[in-house]
Image (cartoon, rainbow, N blue to C red; front, top):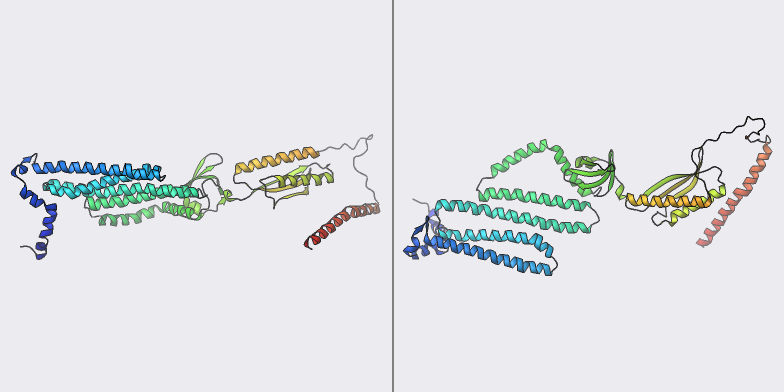
Length: 431
């Protein structure tokens, strides 16, 4: 009637059906224990009460150990905040999981009717993976808190944006895996056709969501390459503003008009980005114009003063700057003022510009140097009683040659003497 394999399983099936010696207990029960009340035997009702008592007792003991024991130790070690906000919720969910295990162990002893036991098995088998999923869901918060502490130690602000994305991704992964286990272990459903359908549907979704996938991989490249971080001022084509947030799909940039631009990460990954936030030095270039009636000696002293202003400022680059009288424009003498500020932000750059320009104005006021601006002078030369303003030039070339010789002997000879003295000083220094 039965195969040898089935006959060999009789003892194990009997032990599974009547665990912990339940068969002997049923033989020893008196008749009063077999009387039925509300569809259950009296000993089953008593067993229910005992099991409920054990469940509450185990829950109280576990809660006491966690709240009073583990939490006390963590507070002594200086991790009280982590214990109260992260570990305590995990411990409470774990206590419920242990209660479910306790019910799974002792409920078979009650020998409940088959139609009731069938539903209890489904509930218990569903609660096990469900509670484990909730536990891992809470553990993700602990992992995210740990990564947040690591991100705070780094100078890059991009890590601060990466931690929430990791937390959301891990939680989504835990929910998906937990749902599959609930379907398979709890509801006893065959998930293979479901996974097959997902794989086929995944191909169709991937084809329909190419841009989304491209943006996702673009965000991965941003986090790996780190072309910018939160707070940096970036420029790329029409994009010009400060990075506020980097997500898995798009990057949020606050423009200088105070509007917000959302740029897909796929486009940013392929674009050429000018990151002003990574500059070590910030350039400041302007042209200082002074009037044509300024004597050459005063121009020299004014330029020396401008250089002194640059070297004395605490936030200017001292090894590279250019301050020279370099142009004769239509209405002014032009002095090139080309310097660099060693500041991290635009606001500090503006502050340094303000200080430098104020010092330049004070220097000009002290030396009585006048700044030039576009002007026009009208000369009236046709009045008979007025002498012409046009200069009279000598037609003899020898006079000009004599003046040129004087200039060569006076000015250029001084420059040559100065150069020779500099060379002698350099030679003596090397010796």
